[in-house]
Length: 412
Image (cartoon, rainbow, N blue to C red; front, side, top):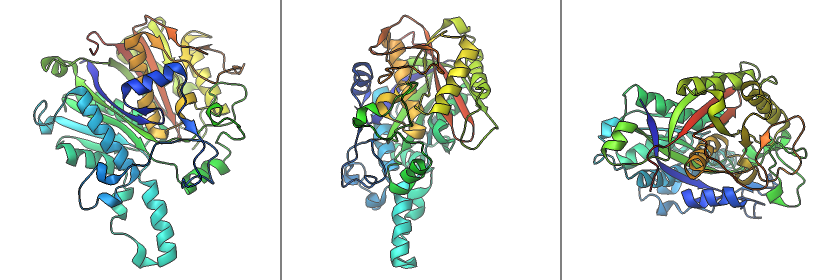
């Protein structure tokens, strides 16, 4: 059963919406900057992928509006955008019980940090009764379901930086088994708060020492020295292709296959030989019954860490051969949105297929010899390929790969 992407909701450091996102990816307009002095993480992050402040009253009018965590606000905004983009209204275009929502992410970090500090200062009386609904990781999906009347399957995925793409894979499974006709899936992340930022900084995982913040994220580059933490949300509407066709909807791309594996190796480091990642790629190709030679692009996880970039390159070489497939990482412009990164990259891959233009890895001035590949650099590359792959890997050894096929009925 074919599954198509019929809607996208994107709110990231590159801007809000499909056109702003793809324009930035192809022109090199970076979303990275130094946090302003009044930002909560200004003393913890040299550079970040930032979004504007959000007035909760512009998103919700409920009695608990003022305590909605930032991840929920971002999720609600992008959910509305994705459904509008798909032209789907629950109850009109799909029965409420046949609609589902799966949203990944770390959880309400701003609520947790604020409440811990408040309790330390004021004691038990300072703890808000809204703490739980602020920090629980299922709140983005639950709030979306409440807002749009989605009464089918609803869940949250917590597989670290693979969460969003894991949500997409789970959505494909729901559609293929006939448990749903429409699934809203993806991730929302708001990690730009001191304690969470400091843990990455103390682990020496973050890019540092760059005079130009837009140059700090450098996947596969010899001078890379860590990733750039970012916030944002990305949600997709997936549909059974027959359901989409029946209502006259077009698709950005088809999810042709997916692969999910676990390294079972280390809590944070990937397997150096890339075997877990290579197996997830193979499973995605097998699910789509697509030969290796037909894949014309890989949107890499490519965070800009030494271990991660090398392990992923090793996996790609094992599957495609040395320099066997064009590769790029869009995190050079967006930074790392944790669980939401993979969904943003899935959207970018779908757009690249539909428009025949592959975005490059910006800032890749001097490719690391330890990462040999057909890197797309300096400018976009035209393509006629019908298939592309995107990878997401997370702490704990989580590997998820999606195989996308160019849509037979692209959006107008």
